[in-house]
Amino acid sequence: NNDHWKEDKSYSMYWIDTNGYNMEAYLSLAKLYIKRFDKGLQAEKYISSKQVYCLGQSYILLNNPQKALKYIELANKIKTGEFSEYFYSLGMYYARLKQLKEAEYYFKEAIKEDPYSISSYNFLIKVYNFGKRWDDAKKVEIIRNKYEEESQYFQYLQKNEKWLKKPMEER
Image 1: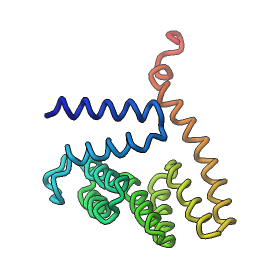
Image 2 (image 1 turned 90 degrees about the horizontal axis):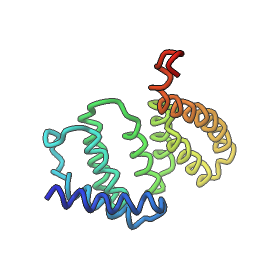
Image 3 (image 1 turned 60 degrees about the horizontal axis):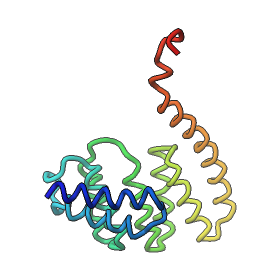
C-alpha cells in the first residue's frame, strides 16, 4: 500500500531529522526502501540508475555488501546520467571489506567524476589514515577543504539563484 509506505517513510525521516545519528531510523528506512523498490536484478524493471543505486546503498546499510555490489554494478550498467555515487559506493564496499587499495582507487575515481564530492574525500582520508599514510591523508584534506569552501559557496548561490536572477531594481 502506497499510503503505508509514505507513513513509515515519514516516520523514519522524522527520526533522522531529529537525530542524524539515529542508526535505527536509517536501517528502518533502508528496509522500507528495499521492500518498496527491489524488483530483482533486471535492468528493465527500473526507472533510473539512481533507484538501483539507492538499493545498493540500502544493502550496504543493512550489512549485505555482496548484494549491494550487485545493485551498484547494475546501476552503472543502466546509467541514466552521470553520477560519482557509483564509484563512491564501490569505495565504501571495498572499505568495509578492508581492501584499502581498491577503496582508494574508487574514491579517487569518484573525486575525478565530481571534485565536489566531499564525502569521497572524507572516506579517502579515512582509508589513508587506516593504512597509516598520514602524509597522503593530509594532502587530500587540504584539497578537500578547498573544494568544500567552493561547494558551500555554490550551494549558497543555488539557494539564492532566483533572487540573483531578478533585475537589480526588483531586489
